[in-house]
Image (cartoon, rainbow, N blue to C red; front, side, top):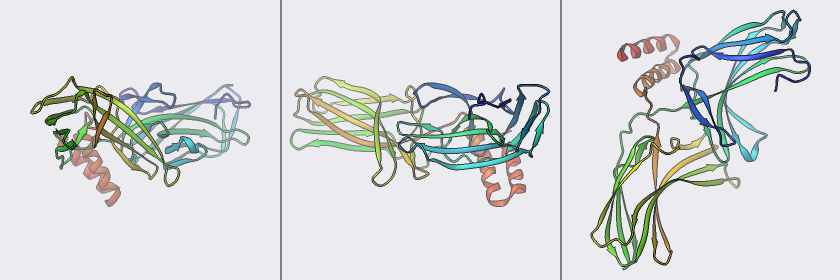
Amino acid sequence: MSFFSFGQSAEIDIVLKDAETRKRVEHKTEDGKKDKYFLLYDGETVSGNVNVTLKNPGKRLEHQGIKMEFIGQIELYYDRGNHHEFVSLVKDLARPGELTQSQAFDFEFTHVEKPYESYTGQNVKLRYFLRATVSRRLNDISKEMDIVVHTLSTYPELNSSIKMEVGIEDCLHIEFEYNKSKYHLKDVIVGKIYFLLVRLKIRHMEIDIIKRETTGTGPNVYHENDTIAKYEIMDGAPVRGESIPIRLFLAGYEMTPTMRDINKKYSVRYYLNLVLIDEEERRYFKQQEITLWRKGDIVKKSMSHQAAIASQRFKGSSSAEKALAQAQAKEQ
């Protein structure tokens, strides 16, 4: 709710404790623009203060309590009336009473579980935000502050190569191979394409990276395909026995980690799509799913912290402090 509404007499400002040093990242908004937001990870503590500034100094502000919320929610654009909350934490900052002067209130949410990555797509949005509210009889005064969460992963233990064949009987036989099936967001796709039989007059060949967003369930399932990248492999006719190397750098493209069945609401998957076009403009496709994951600048540190936090969830807070201290000692 806007705090310029009739009858309101205070403004709210939310300040994170480590705002001066915390990293900020660009994140796409619903209208396609990009803004910068504070970046947090799963298990990190969220703390700071709420500044309530009276517009008319000397005039009392009666309230029914002041609270701070940390919320993670999913909004499906075709069902905008319903916000599906998967994280909802509340801290009461002040009991009902009155403010006679501007005041700051501290808040802290310890080791907050943030299981999913922030995401703004074609039909769905997953967001995390802080919301401070001064409750009043007629109209509440509130302020929201969005934050961005990134999910970090470690290098996958199993990462087999991809080998596939494209064939049209007695006309075309192509074999292509990619070095692995799982890539981090700044990785390089390395591969080769072998032409074993070429009786079609191939004019053009390219590899596309396709992003497929799936939202909803049952009869209300929506699929949105978006071509993230086009990489030209060949312009001209190949000959039998020829091989073409592939090197596709992912760092230049805007992509997210692969997301599978997030809170049973949506999925985001990525595919390598091999496209061949012959001289009669006929198109031939072969598609293969790949898995994308985020490799953070502080993966080792983050994962050790997350290990400590996981320990807290199962063994209690005293064990968590011990695990956290051990993790920090190892990093030093």
